[in-house]
View 1 (cartoon, rainbow, N blue to C red):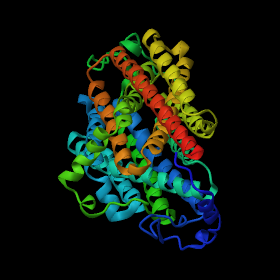
View 2 (tube, one colour):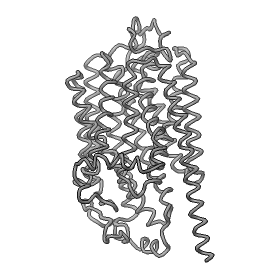
View 3 (cartoon, rainbow, N blue to C red):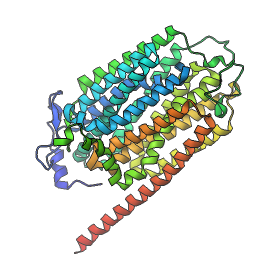
View 4 (tube, rainbow, N blue to C red):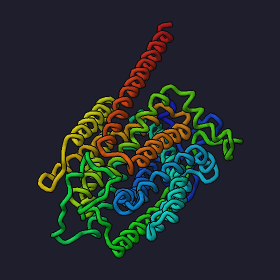
Length: 488
């Protein structure tokens, strides 16, 4: 990564007035065309903004992610739940290609994040009456808003990471890892809170019986009738309405937090001229970045896998192993285990990566996910060994923590000069993983899905290794070049 000069760092350290600026001010990083001025806000205000955006996303995804976890069982008729989720991520792909640069140029990162949250609120509100005529339009709306939401969030965190690195003299890569690690740690706790809510609302009295769990686990076939398996029955409407009402309230809180407390900023590199309009040129910009960047192409399969693995734990594991074997009311508790492990690991990995680098954590992800997928292929769930359902969810959370924090940080590290296009690519390919996983969810037996997951994981990790080797060679070449110049 590019290092800051000592003179520049001394100028940054003299910036003490940033914390006194009005909270509704737009912070601009462009005092000169070369962006050589000091960061426009101080350390504490930067840390405050990291906290605000993290807590805002926590409240938003307390509702959205937990509701997504239940879609495959809650709205299982004719594949409505997973079909709607597939549409969500299809619309997200379109949004990633067309909207982020335009919307961010018009609204700024703060208001792009804040107003995009309204799309999520609409989706959860329309779940009060879940039919094809409401879920599909709602899925399109939340998908379009999701592309701008995540691109703006990633651009916002990356920008203030760069500013914080200038102020402290730390490496940009280390700061990005810490900030993204804290963000995903906080955001992943949404699995805990949202699933506590769902398990509490759907709690049932003991006595439910299940006569047909031999078809659960790797043998689960979503096209087969449920037979005598009462675990897959939909809760009554009163409980569903109560849950949706609570989730809408959480999303509204997220909107209020970001609207009031998040500072608006101007990116070091802002869209100009034609880039601030929706056009065919902008439509191609994401693919131009992909086509022109070898690391981006090599990371595509792993990025797709990050969507597939999240879709599997959300739509397939919760139905094939949890709802089918021990009941929908236990989905929340299992996902709490997943979310807790994921949150702890997100924070820990974000702190440790500066000492050992990315590679050990990607190895951990490969072993935890690969090992779990093989175990799930061989294991038959039942009530007597339901502890393993929680263990496997926790192991999946370890790998997911790596996928969420380290791939984000890797994109920020490799593509600092083209942040928006890079993160649009990230969400595009991750969303593509969601689309294909939710699309095949209602048709393929679970063992086939696990085999596909394992294939994407293996190929993705192999290509990531190539990226890592190339990056180290490039660093070594730059170091040797500097030494030659010094000797001369």
